[in-house]
Amino acid sequence: MTGRSAPIITIDGPSGTGKGTLARLITAWLGWHLLDSGALYRVTAQFALARGVALDDADGIAALAAQLPVEFVEGEGDTRVLLESQDVTDLIRSEEAGARASQVAALGPVRAALLDRQHAFAQAPGLVADGRDMGTVVFPAADLKIYLTASVEERARRRYKQLNEKGMGVNLPQLLGDIAERDRRDEQRSISPLKPATDAIILDTTDSDIAAVVLHVKRLVREAGLASGATS
Ligand code: DC
Image (cartoon, rainbow, N blue to C red; front, side, top):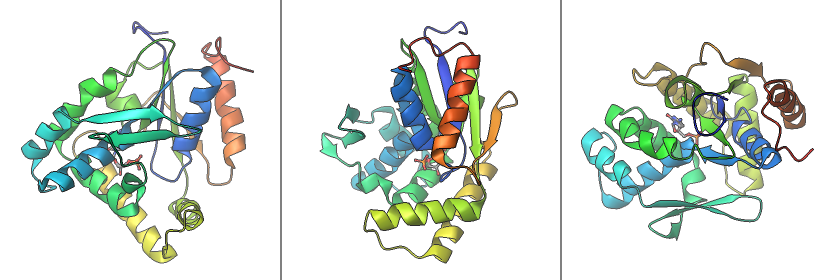
């Protein structure tokens, strides 16, 4: 463990790498807390939309982010996200909501406004933090840093399958273009760009299913001496 009050595992990478699923499964296995930082950016963008604040109004959105009336409520097998007590879980999961989140996430004042809230998730017995800059900026002293990658084609295929299963009509070539565009924006922004921490372990999941990735990460967690509270 570092000098922090709780051990921290960061899981970063672009969307469609299996990051969210991996983070949920590792969190459940360890009995730790989970920070889905992408949800904070998605909710911030949703709040801006609801309040009629333009997505490029950095100070206006930062003011909303600093007071974000968001709650994460553990449901059966998932976490429900409430904004001003309204369940926005499904609303913020759309591709459009992801693109809007990526836009507000490029604004420095918005990122700064969300920093304390993210740090507050670091509580005993431990935290698994899922995002883009968890290992580089938000928790640079984390005990274990994982960075997941996969080819953009494979990530688009996974997302396509996921959206189809939810009954959301999507077009694969368009999805591929949208994901590439979001990668570009997340990687090229000047503040907290998407990139692996120098001490992150990089796992390419293009040819691995999630079960194999989970096994691999469980091994890394054990090797890091962080699995004392694990269920098996
Ligand atoms: O992980 P996600 O798809 O829910 O994230 C949505 C957007 O939020 C993503 O395109 C970039 C942004 N994001 C970020 O900039 N930093 C994070 N730590 C998490 C997400």
